[in-house]
Image (cartoon, rainbow, N blue to C red; front, side):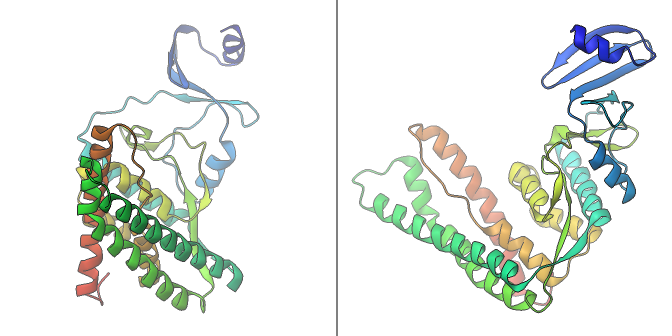
Length: 296
C-alpha cells in the first residue's frame, strides 16, 4: 500500500479510496477515478497510434514506469450479442490498420503447411483409435456415445483441412507472402469497454502474428450467442481477404481440438455437446462454400 501511494504521489490528485479488483486497482481521487495495473504496454500503444488505431485507454504515466495508470471507463451494459458484434468490428479494424505482408521463404511456408497436415493426420488417427476403443466398450458412457454419434463430423472437418491445406500451399508458395498484423491475443468480452466510444483493454499479450487467431478466439468463446457466418461476413467486409486468405482462415477454424474425457461424465457431455455445436456451424459454412465455389 505504501509503495502504491508513493508511486501515485507523482500525480496531482488526492486519493479518496482504493479498491482491489482482480489484477487491477481502482483508485478514486479528487480528479476522478483511475485504474492502476502492473506492467507497461507503452511500446504497443505507440505502435498502434502510429498505425491510426486509438481504441485503448490513454495512460497518464510516463513510458518509463513499471505500471499503467489510466482513467476509469464505466462500461455501458449492452446485450452480449451486440457487444460481440462490436468486438468483431473493432478487431477487424485493428487487423486492417496494422496488417502487412511478410515474405516467407519456401522452407517457412512448407513448415506451416506440414504443421497443418501433420496436425490433421494426428487428429485423424487419434479420433479413429478413440472411436475403435469406444466401439469395443461393453457399455458406453453418455459422453462416449455423444462422441461416437458425431464422429463423422470430426472426420469431415479433418479431411477438409487435409485437402484444403494442400490446395492453399500450392496456391501460396508462388506468392511467398502471408498477411500478418497486430493481434490482441486476449479477447474476452469484458476486455471491450464501451462508453462514448469503444476501448480494448488488457494488451499485455498482444503481438505481431497471424490475425485468424483473434477471430478464432471470439468464435470459439461466443459461438452459442452469434451467427458465425454473419460474423465472418462482418470481419471480411471491414478487413478484405482474398480467396486464399479466407480459406486459410477456414482451415484453422475447422481443425478440431483433441477431446479428452475426465471422470466427470456430466462435465464431459456438457463440454463436448457445446463443442459439437460450434463445429456444426463451421461445417455449415464450409458446405455452403462447396456449393458456391465462386463465392467467399
